[in-house]
Length: 152
Image (cartoon, rainbow, N blue to C red):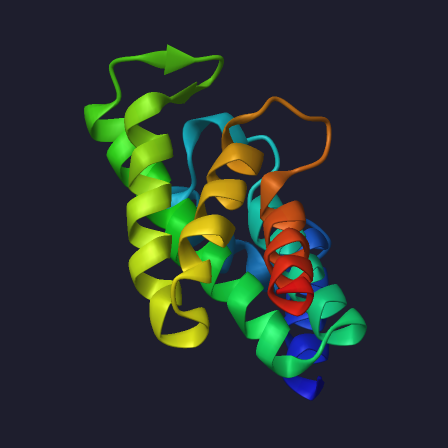
């Protein structure tokens, strides 16, 4: 819980990035790694993810929250990498290859935590990732994964 609050506070510093010249060098570094679509609002995905993590630990047991976090960190990471570099079959702004990368990677990562239920959680997570929505998937995925882990 304290770690989540620390991460949330750290993201607040990032949001206030233009307030002081002292932290501008940090943002120059962040811009090097940020996706082109996020250049107007750098670190926004990290902020949404940390908010989702914080709420997951607040609303669910630590075991369930861990499942949601692993689902997001592994699945979303692999979906982004594979989808960006190898994605050919488009589904809106995402790719079918990214969908499968999410499913396979998060299934493997979740198996030690929940056994065969990893397949169900990974599939639902991949669907949440690929569907168009108004709420950032980095916020939704930890919550959805945590809720599913508690239900099963």
